[in-house]
Image (cartoon, rainbow, N blue to C red; front, side, top):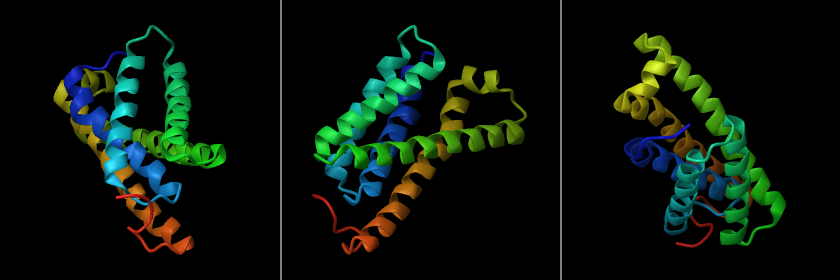
Length: 159
């Protein structure tokens, strides 16, 4: 499914940055925004381009998941298990958030899913709760994983 550029810019790109933030936090690297932003931008551009390919819906999710793991492993030099754990956490967060928030928007607005996706601004608004959820999960994970690793929240990773 192709995504309009403005929807990608206003919702898809922030979501990709949120995915990167969750992965960094869960891996125990803290929230180094100077690394998270370019990593999220790489994720976002790839996610956008993969949506333009004529492939089945679930396949793009698999490609995106594998890409995030490989890029994260490369940019952080972490081991593969940490990259996979971080990627799974981000993926589960995105899927759970989309299921919950899209259903809520459908219920609250009375629109059908097709109506939401056909109106650009409704599509962007429906996706923003997921962006907020990702950033919230990143902040909470950062506190949990850094405390567990004895690093004090905000002191892990590079800045």
